[in-house]
Image 1: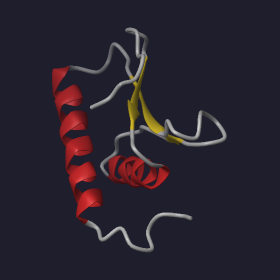
Image 2: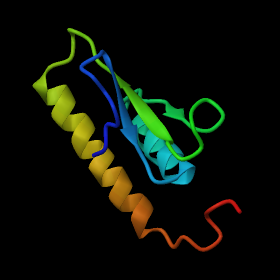
Image 3: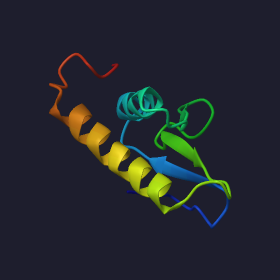
Length: 89
C-alpha cells in the first residue's frame, strides 16, 4: 500500500490510482465499522486520491491487521468489477 509521505503522524493516508477506487474502498471499510474517509479532488491534488486512517492509543495490533486486510480485500473487490462505464470521463 502506498502511504505517500506519511511521516509517523496519527493520520496515515492510503493512496489510490483513482477516485472511484478510493471511494469504493472507503465505503467498504465503513460497512465494517472502520472509519477511514475518502479524500478526493478538490481537497487534495487530482492525481492523489486517498483514504485517511486515524490512529490512537486505543488501537492495537489486531485493529491494524483488520484494517489492512479489509483494505486489501476491498481493493481486490473493486478491481474485479468491470471498469467500462464505471470511471467518470
